Image 1 (cartoon, rainbow, N blue to C red):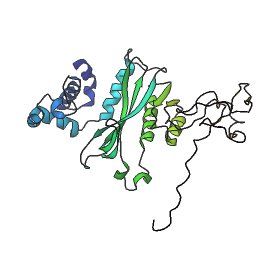
Image 2 (cartoon, rainbow, N blue to C red):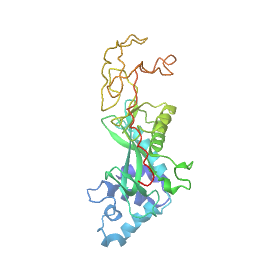
Image 3 (cartoon, rainbow, N blue to C red):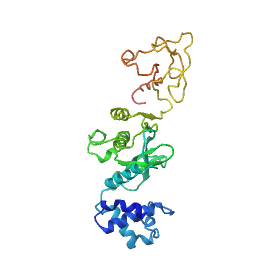
Image 4 (cartoon, rainbow, N blue to C red):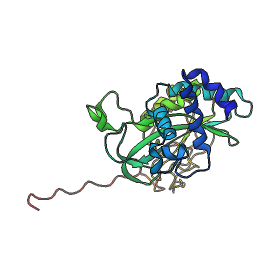
Amino acid sequence: MEEYAVRFDHLFFSLAQRRGFREYPTGLLAPRERNKTITCLAGAEPVAGAGMPGVQRLQFFLSESPWEAELVNDRRLELLRKEWATAPHDGGVIVIDDSGDRKDGTATAHVGRQWLSRLGKTDNGIVTVTTVWTDGRVYYPLHATPYTPARHFARGRADPAFRTKPQLAAALAARGTEAGFGCRAVVADCACSVSGDWYLALREADLAYVVALKPHRGTWAPADQPHTPSTRPTPWPGRTPSVPASGHPLSVTSVTGTPRPGGPPTPAWAATDPTRPAGWSWPPPTRPGCRRRPPGT
């Protein structure tokens, strides 16, 4: 630990900060319960040891001491790039995810009532968006940023400074590649699949992506492959499969597997962009609107 920690000494300007930096990761790596509490990180009793000098010293280092967490993280990533066992390469992927922790009250920064994936429910807490680089052999975190709910902004979701979780995730993915962590693709769960801003940000950063789709969300795909996770396309009864310019026969179907009257829609890019996949898909059928009730009922 000392051999590793000494590489960060130039980022701290006092001996107390350097000692606090050594105590913090030691407490995180030690086999102790509740290692998210200050008393446990300092090796003290849960409640009775809150006033001990070691606990107060660690509390001051984490909350009041003037050191830059981003500079420490950049130094950590620099060491990972230089080490042969953890050096990134273009065969890995950047995984995007978010995790939430429950938090009482409303005075803490970034706290709000929102979905907490770790608990599987909506509750009052703090959500952090993170990125991880992995190649299946090793993995390590890259960057993290807290999500600030709309209630913290003067104009809510319409405020220019407000950023959704997918927007924060796309910015972190682009930041990871700029830091030298190349990847084959950016991987995310279905929470990002409904955000057009997420796709646009990754395309502007020239990053490929693999994203999970919700069961009934359609996407462009060859006709012999699924258009949604819940359905598979079937040949359109009574019609001959169309043959595009590439010579591969494709059957025209809807995403629900039911025949549609008339011919398939012609995308605007069909004649101009030969790199786009051939095939068509329709969105799932929408429910009819509710009937308007007479007044007084």
